[in-house]
Length: 208
Ligand SMILES: [Zn+2]
Image (cartoon, rainbow, N blue to C red):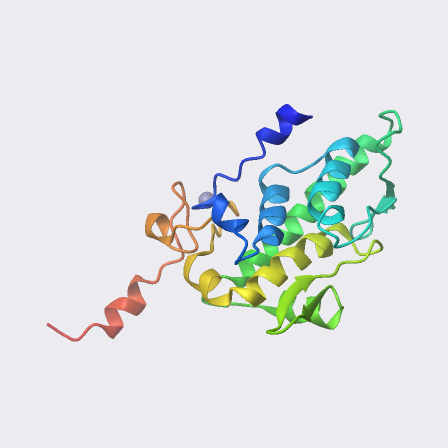
């Protein structure tokens, strides 16, 4: 377990240590990116993800069951022997991950659809606390798994909107996440072209 923990790297991030710096709490973002980067597809892995990123940080108790979309609730009991639910849990985690990434892809320009932020606020899955107000995730045990992960992202985006508007990249083709738009724009990746913005730039350039 400790070995696996040390490999919970988030290579898509420019500087992971900066995410846990005391003056800028980015642990919610780190938790979400860890889920996306290394999806916890087994009961022990998902329970450990909850314990480390949500229980230890005081956000919520570990749920006894997880749900997603129309799937049946799957028990999350790490002490139970691996059973038939393992395959279901893996599919549920994949479905949750896909919904999270699809929401982030919609958040990219030119659409910049940020309705998942207002949905998180309206649903009480993030709350503004302290003075000055800082957004923090407040998911509930009965929330679908994707909403729990999105609450982590929503809190960080609400706190650091300019950072995400400038650096968050989601490949429109393969949904890969990065934070370096200099490589392939905000909607591409090393293997896929970004959404074309060249025509916009050409239009705005004065005639030669
Ligand atoms: Zn790609």
